[in-house]
Length: 202
Image (cartoon, rainbow, N blue to C red; front, top):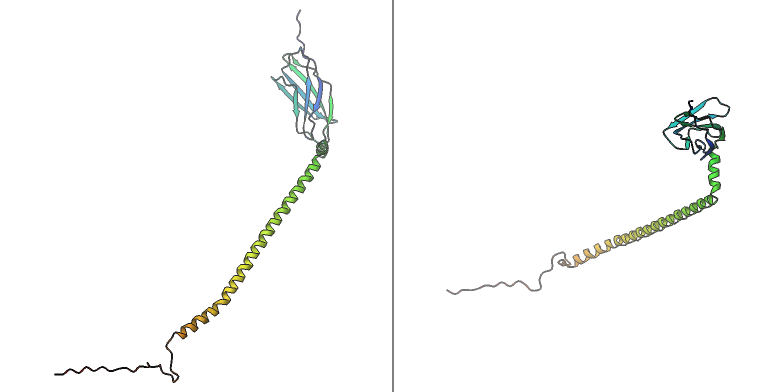
């Protein structure tokens, strides 16, 4: 009498976790005394006949990622175990619904009640830093303006003193030149020129 090998039992404890707007992870368990070499997953939208079939062999994994899902959409999944003898019956169907992207973000923020407060504190710190930088820039500009004003004043003082210096130089030069006679001629020496004659006797 031939004994026909039996196919594995249907997977149990099928659950969907890590649920996101566009992806999810389905996991399951198999009986301990059964040798399983792979799995097959059928996925479809609720009330839609289109079916996606995922199959993988030579693996002992007990989970599979579902991708390219649509947000706010209901899906149904079945899992089958694969052995050398063939495929098991399909597991009980599992119905799940993907969340909206906005709802997912809101749930993340709700899970971290202090997130909003920390964000506001960081914004306040950034504003304080910006105010301090502006004050430093204003102080530097005022310092440069003061330096420029002082330079202009010193330049004006030097420029105003230049004509007086030129007049004094001209006056001193005229005083040191040869004096003229009131009649218009040059003043002669007080001592007349002496004519020296040497007489040599023969």
